[in-house]
Length: 595
Image (cartoon, rainbow, N blue to C red; front, top):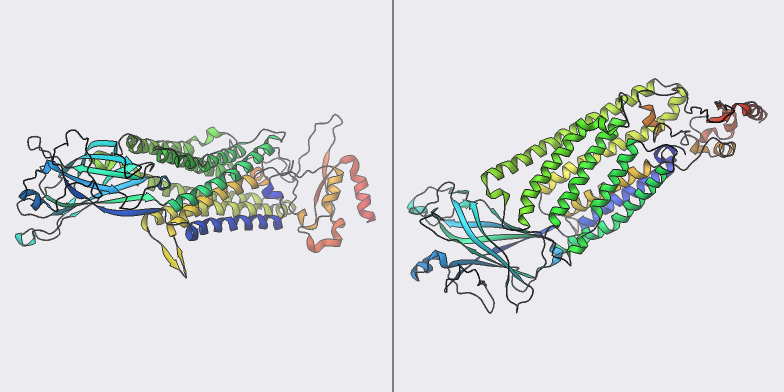
């Protein structure tokens, strides 16, 4: 077999392939920007103050509805409660999700609820620093307005208040509200039911100093965030389309690898492993979550993404390392343990962090790692360190690419003029691929920054462009296109060389002469891979002879520029290298002279 497709495909065909991939890349951005809605929707709720007249808060069997035919007894504020001598333990804050005349859907995928207090300032009842709120919370569900509520979760939760009163603390400013930070309240990994009900109590126990934190709660506001059903359908459709695309090209690639006479090298194995991780990420198992109450889907998605990103970062290190000229022990995975080891360890730490966060939420959706000072500081440290490591990795990747370019340039300058001319096109293609790699890495960094900073949409002409949706689908499509292109371009070419018939056919193809470089495939997948090796065999020839037959047949290189006098304008360079047996050299030379 000849070398890889990236070296043997003609420039015209390569441009066509690149244009097709670029079209799919633009289409993936347009799908999210012009077709798909915003990834998430935030809905605001105001809790209703219900009165537990029969004092069932110890049993936890009764659920309080804020509206509807079976709505609870309500009070407007705490002044009314004091006038009616209603104790704080008998007040229940009720929130129905969704709003009246609406339904939740499994297409929403997840539900995140954030809690915020409206606390009025009182001179005789001020909030102390570091006040801790204790809540008795319950979550119930039902799928019909006529059915009874079924308990889903119940827990005693603690949240630390972080409130600031900006005005002067005087009697004149009583009634003004504190500025309190939002608190994480609940996260459900599956929205399998139509209706949800939250009941929140604030039990007061003076002996145990529970909720003796001072302060007067005027209202409780909640923000429910869920994934848009329209975006979920677009996302699932992309996964369904991309899964077979990458899977088929991966199977095709490995079939060609196994057809070679030599075993696959490390670079070919790592490309195949990257394709496997991409396919594992693409498999649209989320379709099943629409019909099943799989609360672990968020955790499973995080694990799949972590595997892909760790594989991708490791691939870039090995890909650059295998093309470095000063590599002493290439084709050995153990050589890269110092670079790959920290990547694997870092993602393992993130996996442990995710398990501590989402793993506990599988049983208790009210659990939050940010509720504890120790865990919140540890989580923040994880995020900061991860951000620093990603930036350092990107800089290190740029440095490695620069080293590869420098080594290739140095090796190219030492080649003979004839061989150097044949390598120019191959080197340009390889450098272009490396620059595309850096562009993909940079786009990923930009994606994370924009997704955190900008939560909204832009207006462009008469169309509404959903920026976050476009980046979600665009970046996801970019990784699939990148992996697809990498597998395709580094697959072994099907073209054969060496026999007289194929050589004669090659001589008449004009522009393909530059691209059909004779590559033996003995030392590696591509000519650039072999050229950047520490020790190059037969540096002045592209073909190295083999002494396999019993008659010791010798291969030599024959330059036949005279054959191409009819098409000099279409040939770059103006000669071609052909391999013939030593017994055929004289006849070939005579035939050339006669022509």
